[in-house]
Amino acid sequence: MKKKETELEGVYIIEPDIFYDYRGYFMQSYALNTYLDIDIKNNFVQDNHAMTLKKGTIRAIHFQNDPHAQAKLVRCTQGRILDIAVDLRKGSPNFGKWVSVELSADNFKQIYIPRGFGHGYLTLEDNCEVQYKCDDIYDKQTERVLKWNDPTINIQWGITNPIVSEKDANAPLLDECDINFLFDERIL
Image 1 (spheres, helix red, strand yellow):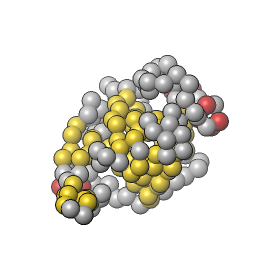
Image 2 (cartoon, helix red, strand yellow):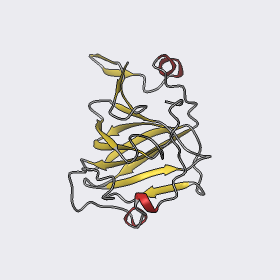
Image 3 (cartoon, rainbow, N blue to C red):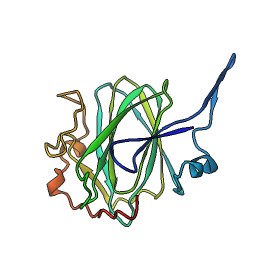
Image 4 (cartoon, rainbow, N blue to C red):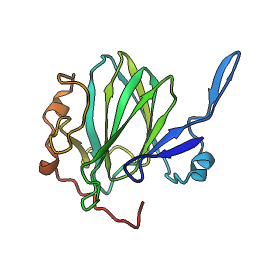
């Protein structure tokens, strides 16, 4: 397994080991000891599985405020997506900056997104399935979303007229949202 750093400290691209033979392949998508070995120490408590029917669909920048912030380990198990992580920690030198990675059923890559970051993605094919682990349970009271085309964040989605939910279309901009994450350089 390889852990690659991104431009946002704490956000990593994970490339699992894939073992191929005449029958197909085998991979471990998650094992606590393997992730501890690469210094990802979260206790994941919830698995989510999303299916998106149409290419060009954006699931906007979602997160949960403290005390129910979530770290996520994301992978695409069918199709291809452009996955996005946005630093939402006030006081961070990277506040409002984002990174992207293409995740697909063919490349097996995963992205690790720590607490204090938002997460969203664009489907690059029809019928995409995304599975991700969270280290806190879903909490409706602390759930937040940011507008997919916020000009301050300026994510380069590569699409001008995406399919978005009503909730995502009506989401607030970064400077209108009550984000409560604070940057602490001791916790990286």
